[in-house]
Length: 425
Image (cartoon, rainbow, N blue to C red; front, side, top):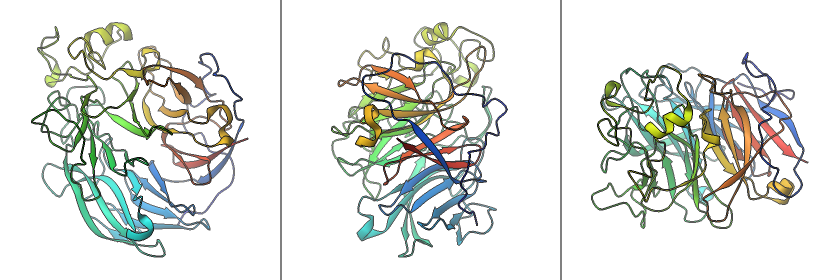
């Protein structure tokens, strides 16, 4: 059992260093000064968090399972994956490999009456494996989960290695699940699994954002083109690991990591195409390794990111003129964007209503390592944004998940094994 530990978030990456100073002009309005408190440490790759109104926090660890931190700081291990020890219940079909494992967690908007909790995880229940969204019922004391129902069972998983950077099994799963505070439906982000055919496929639900009800059925008004799986809300995605809803409009925005270039934040519209299409022998490209052009050209070698983005665009507006235009593309660089949420409340001063995004710090072929948090002032039309890099009150890490808690503070999970609370002042 983990204990509540107060102190400084440890920096276990050799490359943590000091936060990035790369910023644009600071948006108007006072900037909050952040203080830091560690909530949990000594975790194993915490991936996501979800809160009850009283502050009870459910969280996932990618290769262990689902746990809950009670309001008194006690941690209860609820559901363990294959070979995980010490959990109240276990699911032997759930496993981790590479980037795959237990990922997103979300609380039902009607939790007070139905006690439903949702988790996305990789499963071996059907060969060669899939990513699944599961619904559980939480008991009154939030000490156990039961009544598992797999509401989505066909999200692709990559079972075999391929000839690509980060090419091992389990690549590109998406994995974030969030309920919209506007329409009450569950949005599920899925990755392309290093498969060139998947993002633009009308029937395979990888490289998509799904919009479903609590039973996994398609929500009305998804707007996908004729012949598409009706659960699809948007398609043509690479690996969106973040989705958040803008206060006031509740429009969904994805945070998505790019291929050696162009991490993107994009405002979604029903039936929209995000413009990622890594198939070979199209758009001026010839054959590519393992039929996936996602890292081309010269996927293992140094190429100017601007040249890469022309050859293999993250958003191919030439092939797809109506593709959703990103609000921001990280100055054309890829540094491992992983999550995002909108800040809300007067305590955030000039950042109230703005989107904060996390980066895990990928740096290769001269790209600077980006272990940082950025705040984006996104234009009203969602087509442009101004970035401010957060001055961190603790050492940087591989920031994996961002959630604003019911107390109004920002909770941050890092791959190094910690969940921290950032309080504005």
